[in-house]
Image (cartoon, rainbow, N blue to C red; front, side, top):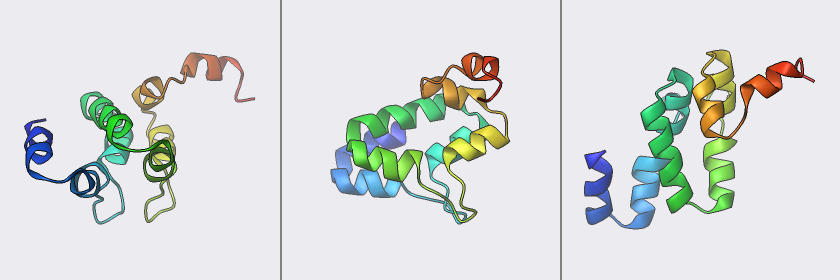
Length: 104
């Protein structure tokens, strides 16, 4: 995560947020969403921590948790579609508890 350390020393906070934390690929997926969909735990955890430190609660909600890509899917959707439970664990959701309820 040396890139992040370098960026914090060279870029303004808004530039770090927009060009690293919230930047998207051609499909409209930021690193948070890609890490969730692929189950890349280390990246997912780090981006989540950075988001909590650098963004307001509203930005976290709108730009990380509920942001949709060009297919209309959120990080929650991608993680569920691909069965990546590490996303839910980082978000503090106990999947065993959800499964035990039978989806109700």
